[in-house]
Amino acid sequence: MYIITLSGNLLLIIVVRINPKLQTPMYFFLGNLSFNDISYSSTIVPKILINTLSQDRSISLMGCAVQMFFHLALGVMECFLLAVMAFDRFVAICRPLHYNTIMNKKLCAGLVAGSWSMSILNSALHVALTFQLPYCKSHNINHFSCEMPPLFRLSCRDTLYNEIIMYISAAIIGSCALCLTLTSYIHIISTVLKIRSSRGRHKAFSTCASHLTVLALYYGTVICIYLRPRSTYSPNVDKSLSILYTVVTPMLNPIIYSIRNKDVKNTVKRTQTKNKVL
Image 1: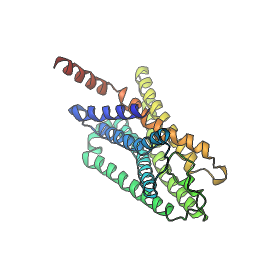
Image 2: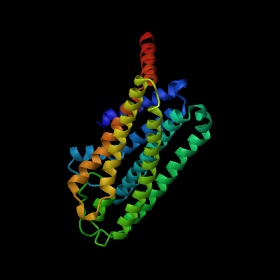
Image 3: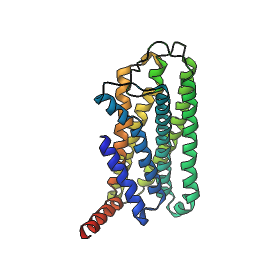
Image 4: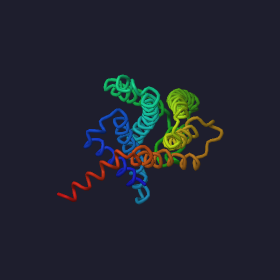
């Protein structure tokens, strides 16, 4: 699954770079999503593979903090990028005549830069608060990676304050990104319903269904981990859910968002034909 994630997302990045026709806002965001998915999965999966094959399953305190920082930052960035991509599709479908004016290079760059800034600040806040806690119960993290909930269980101090901050930030970021995404798709579906061609409606709904499936999978697992009451905490359940949004979603994104796209497939076919000729 990790190899598929790397190859699928790298393929998309290369295709977008070599085809001038794909230098559009939609593919700009898709390229950023692919880069984010590679980085996001790479913060966790290589360490899991090493731990599986090696008897030494340790990680330094600094290594744990660095892993948590990038995992949180890239996870939040995923939410923002999915929301921005939904907004881009909303403008393209519902405001087609104004698309180039609205989705100009300055706005696209600003959306990505703003998303990175908020993701990094949010991650830095949580890492700083988490690693100020005293840890005395155990040195064994009952998880595949360094995440906040399992680390809270190792602290000998009450972590209610940290959990409240976690709930608030997750609720604000998640609700804002999810609301923007769902609002965009509601307008998209409303516009699609007005299309007279049944074939056109089916194609649009098929695309929306695929996107919403990924959104439901990603947001559902994240909400279950970061917004669930402490009384219902289950290490085994959390470990399984974390694999879904860390490994499965980054693997599915290039398939659902891009590999099925005709422009991407045509670029790959032309490149293969040129290579055969050479």
